[in-house]
Image 1 (cartoon, rainbow, N blue to C red):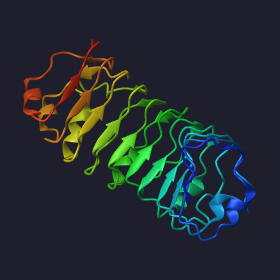
Image 2 (cartoon, helix red, strand yellow; image 1 turned 90 degrees about the vertical axis):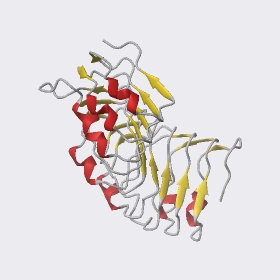
Image 3 (tube, rainbow, N blue to C red; image 1 turned 60 degrees about the vertical axis):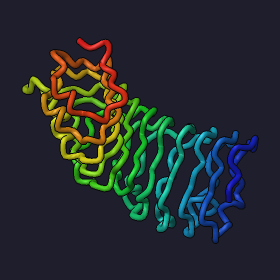
Length: 252
């Protein structure tokens, strides 16, 4: 069922949850608002669904407590640009089939249970805080990780072999104070498919490492302005021969 890019408004109808054979629901770019229908009528009760996309609406409520109790086949969940709020339920960890995309960006979530079974994870534009979880590196399927903007703090712990797109802008992330160079950039050398690195508007206090030249030859975009990086630009930047955009303005 695809009803995107219209002027539909009002609540998601109760009867939609009775469409037991649906494989796909797309209601993006409408004016739908209010809460998702009760549990026995909700779209989260349709066990045949593979894809849900209701982004860019005005739906407001807490996230369903057990979204994957019935959605055992769901591969793609996109709820961005709505007004969901509160904490993410731990039961989200049960979404074992959710391997393509999880997009919860630009809502009003304050806490999140990190789930990395999917290839693409978008959490930007919420009110998430605390340190980035140390177990990110255990989820090797991730190709896209977008945590910006939020209020994450502390060190960045990322070492994902399949990562292609990393965006952690507008947070409060810092460097290991015992290291002169940005240690997490050194760890990214194992991301052999990395194409985009965007780390601007953070509180890093360190130098660009010479190991920058060891980053993936695929890197095309490196953006790090206003990020607290200091010192000299290493000559090894010249090894990154596929760069098409390098932005490091307003550095210390």
